[in-house]
Amino acid sequence: MALIIYHQLGHNYNWNFESISEDQTGDGVILAPRYMDRKTVELLPSNIKENAIFDPQFFLPDYPKGKLKSYDFFPQNLSEGFQTTEYSEEYAIDGAKRCTYFQESNDFQYLVIPSRRRTGMPSDLVEMQQKLFVDPFLNIISQKRSKKKPLLQIVLNVDMVKDGEYSKYLLNWITSLTEIGGVYLIVENQGVSKQLKDIDFLSAYLRFIDILSENGLDIVLGYLNTEALIYTLANPTIVTIGSFENLRRFSIRAFEQTDEEKQSGPTPRLYISTLLQSIAHDYINVINRLLPTGTNIFDKNKYQAEMFEPTFRWHFTKPALYKHAFLEFSKQLRDIGLYKGKERYSRVVELLNIARSTFNIIEEHGVIFDSDSDGSHLSHWLTAINIFAASKGWR
Image (cartoon, rainbow, N blue to C red; front, top):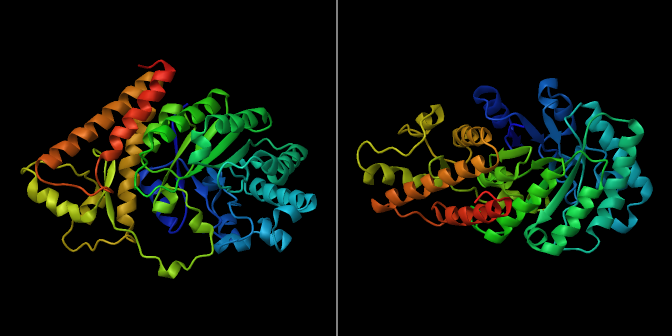
């Protein structure tokens, strides 16, 4: 099966639709009711819906932030005061009916069974998920005899994945659910670096994905940054790309009660495919000045041309930044999708080594990147995929 790319939608989701339509940077979308009200979703054309996954986003069921208020099946809207102990069987069944009906009537690709976000490694995670969502949704889906695959959403955290016993507990539960057709995995990582550098987590998550894939389940990986590149080795069905940082790394802050007006915007960044990294924009002139004439590490496309115009004003709200990244990174994912198994591993290793060499060349000419723009993640990624490759007999 070819690697499939979906856009993780959020704020300014029209950029994603335009990128897919104009540049063929994706095969579908994951819809976000946090940012899209019910009427907007219902009015989407059928050709978008049939290649769309609707994420109910029940992460914090007691607070319907943003456009979540427009969905009558969101737990707080339904029960007028969500509390786990008071979310009765009646509410759970009613919510499952409404949410399932909404997904089916809009003809989305899957029927997503939502998940709460939990912290730590709670001993009752499976019990609560089963009671609040899994059993009610599966019962309704069974009654409707829907032909669409149920897709079980699970919000993990780093500790859950890295702990061998806990991940085994989750894997045993997931693979015991014979009624589901796939899993929509989200990982909450509260690390401060722009790129993931936890070798133990990365290698453990690759094993986690691989086990589910080997059990014949469709695997959708949500909220990914460029580490999507190495996750392809575990043979997921769908990998995601997103615009703003909170769509490339899951953050519960996007669903909490916060004063968004006081939050400052991120530094505008440029994705460079040969580096597998997005660099702060103020390095661009320095690179052009210090590297030898004729040396060009920048990807050339219409968005790059726009951004490199002297009159361009760099700001995180400029769509060219994101459309450029979508275009160049999707090309890399498409390329990797042409390979399988050991050959895919070899291709990813090649890309990582090219990135390391390119960083070395740039630094030899005097450009020293900050920790959010450098290549320090590459050695961590190589180590993690080598661990995974060894477990698969690829090296």
